[in-house]
Length: 351
Image (cartoon, rainbow, N blue to C red; front, side):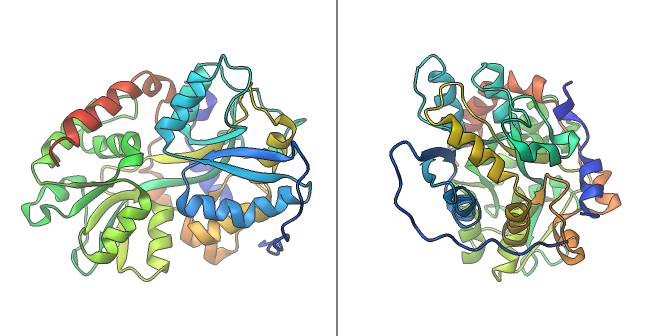
């Protein structure tokens, strides 16, 4: 297992000792010279909004205009591999979850990262370092629930099989791999196979769960009362609760899985110099603190100091840390295609 699969509990502990720095001022729009852009592949929605608010101003100082290539992670990963033999790729900085990024790296599409190219890499916590990407933000998946509709809370994944939750349990379609791994913990999953997740999802399908196209769509369904329970990143649950939704979340007794959202530079990037500057900006400590405060994700750099109140929100207790299970990226990468087939053709079909 490579170093990227190391248990991330050390990071979470160290994050608690990381002082809040002043927010970056917004930089006014400026005229762009030819070749001054960087194309960033991302999901859109809240994540892109925060990139625009807190990362764009950093690279704007160098006259770089950011253009977004928005879509889901599967399409982005497929595009990277399909274009690997092209002289000019369509993205300069693709952003992906760790599992998808590892999968793309196995196709040899990325330029190796180094501190010479990305100076802020020197501050990255060692357990998050890879040879092919930089880690942007971190969180873990939890069970999120409407505390008014589920007043007793939840203990286990298997609570969602109760008929009283028929039609009230939800997933975000774009998180299919993570959803499958997460629920698979209830069937003895060890983070090296999607099969336990298939077993649980086959049971849950009889309770008519719902699948929404995006994380934002899940939030809208919580707001309307259409759903009461969902698998989601703790960071998102914090964001939605701050927006006024009556939500709580729990790491079920079976445990949780972590996730790191990463960025890389393809070998056929059209604007490599700008791409490296954007990568460096993603690791800027001020931007990382903004993401923690606005979106609930924990920093991946040692110099992004969080105040105690913020660390208490985005961090995890010792008891929770003991139930966060890292997964084997190498073993899972070879199963991604089968996982997507199961999700689309067996689980989602007919819901």
